[in-house]
Length: 446
Image 1: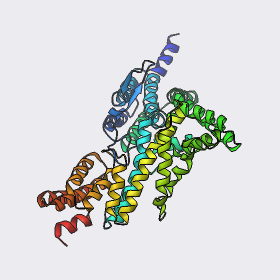
Image 2: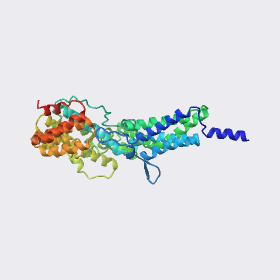
Image 3: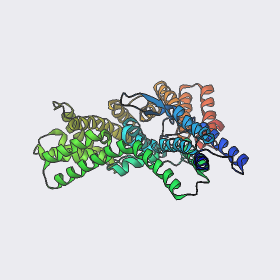
């Protein structure tokens, strides 16, 4: 009995391997790497500052109590390393939990963090529009535009998940690599197939527990949306609306999905016999994809009139109709902004200013740049200075910040404050790290 007991203990207690020093040093390095990854970028955005592990939380009970990933992930990784001196299975369980915790971040973000998803979609569109406007209004900048995954809309669950993965930053990748490497080191030497399967099963169980709620939400929403699509094709507007309502209830992120809102508006139009003002939202949303067409701004007034009527209608209280109303309000503002940009590109700045003033532009949105630039073009520098200064502090992307700081230098120049203008131009060149033509031209007087 004693020999058998010793063999059982030998299976669960880690004995010193022949090459302990090398493995121990590597494992400690990976643990340090895992801890060091938490202040890094875990979720990135086209414009705003990135989120770190401390900004992300894991809900660990039904009461809604949360624990920061900056504490939970390193604790699990460290526990996995410490437990190797007591029990290898326990160590592997802890490291599996750490790895799955990291891997679940994009899925959780796509399914439940609607605000972050909406921010990425909105900022993708804002950044693309800003780049096009800068190219049309200013001299081409030799500083290259940093690459990013531009996702301006989504429709199905796969596209929604793609946004979650597109948002991942270098800190997340380091954390995932460190956790996986630690797991491989601790599991090294488990040659028996049953033990390898045990590791795989542990990972699978943790992955299922971590991602099942998000997967269930996305799948149920997708099924309801597919049913709504089939009913819409058959012309059953009311039934399609009910299906889309269920899809939205399961997955609130669909409230910022342009394709989904278009289909919902079409269903509402069919269900109301074309009498509901929100039924025209589908064709009005198409105007945004056509705003590069010459003369398209001439059809904006009629669209804005339809949208205005829709926003003043009595709300039914249904979530889907509420989402369509919010989309109508946002679209009305966006059409004013698009008209202002079109007039500015035609150098009709007085008309551009009138359009921009009617748009509902949040102060922290890059869209405020267009209003500020219009003020500057009309020789009114003070409002432009205020907007450029505020945006330059809020935008994290270095290339966009460089353009904002250069525009701030232009505003100070028009204002007559050449000292602040020179500082702004120098700051622009420092941000770009290579020659910024606009700033170089201003500083050299060429």
